[in-house]
Length: 159
Image (cartoon, rainbow, N blue to C red; front, side, top):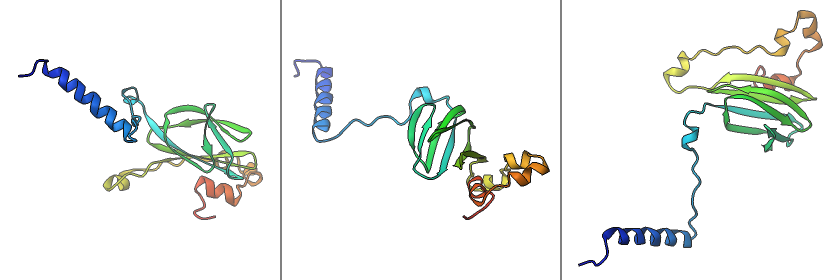
């Protein structure tokens, strides 16, 4: 018969197994999501620049270098810095925001993420007007986008 209660042996077994796992090179894995994230809404952000390999800061924190694909960006307004240039952007839930920096000008395009199966055919894309489309006709000739700008904003399929 056991002289100690069973929970003492169970606790010792858990401690022993945890110590053994850590001693054999196993490390604790950080959770990818927490309960605090449960109510959060996320979008995606893609950042390009010419020249590439410019530092990218989002809300004052360095997140990488261009070209950059961020899969989880909280919905809302953010301060985006690419090199010495900065812009306030808005990320929407379930949408992908593409931002390009070319000759000191930002080019942005928002698109809905592609849905799988039948939802894709039912999903309707909302066209997002570019600054060139919003300009009056006499201004459009002055601000005619270059091939790079058309490629970044998605109106030109290949560069």
